[in-house]
Length: 413
Image (cartoon, rainbow, N blue to C red; front, side, top):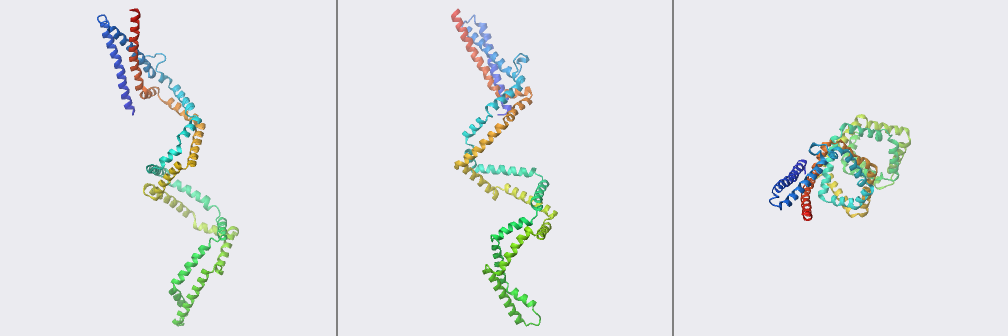
């Protein structure tokens, strides 16, 4: 309900309560004027008189909470405007002692079962869609706020610190030594030899043509053809031998060369310096800046396109992961208990550490409010219900007046 609606409801209740007071006054005047002629009106007069007294007393009590009755600065009235700071401090202390207690928070969280409830919500398709939509909005907002030049500068500094400044030779050599020792490079050698064999088989004409082009002009074409055919056969035979024999001299020579290269990259200054020279040629300043710019641009574009498309692979997998996590929370008791403990521990730590700061927000907020505005805000919230006190006071006062008059009349005549 808005403040406008609350104000309208408050006005209606005030009008009703005041109307009852006016009705009691009219009844009292009529009954008082005619009671000698009609003695039974004495009871009506007593009831209306009690009703007026009750209505006026409760009007005074309710009004005194929020302002001075009729503008008169009567002691102990306008309680809320005068005592708002104390009220704020008392409310803050009450909240701190009764709500921001570590035992209260942990007990409440233990009884709620946050993980299970969250899991039941997350495993619903519409909930996963909601999480994905909110995550997409968060990513788009983050990219809107982030400055591209600043991000590129951070990426460039990280690239220089972790990639360019350290020497490449020793770490590459160490990794290569382990790779070569375990024989992982043999598959690459096999692939290269297989490709060479395929090329030789598919390029007989090329081999014979090259032989013919390199032979003297006086050699007959028939001889060129025989020589070319022989050369192609020998090349094919050689490649097949390397392909089939894992201990072929060529393979062993490649293994030795690679092992020596790995050692040189770690220990030989000339090789290390050559690796640094190659690194400098590959990644000079303009190239680094271009790489970082393109890296950030690619990441940003890819993410924005992915989160903007509800049917993208990233979004689809993210939704599936959300639902899977929700299902695990509801079915895996051990995981749910662990998550609940994390939540309870986090909430307990926050309450234990920041309870005074949290409750202090209440006192500080109330302290900054204007006294009149504070009174008006509180009256809008509870004033309508307080008007029932006036109505009840009118009714109870009428009944009390009638009972008192009846008893007195019965005793004293």
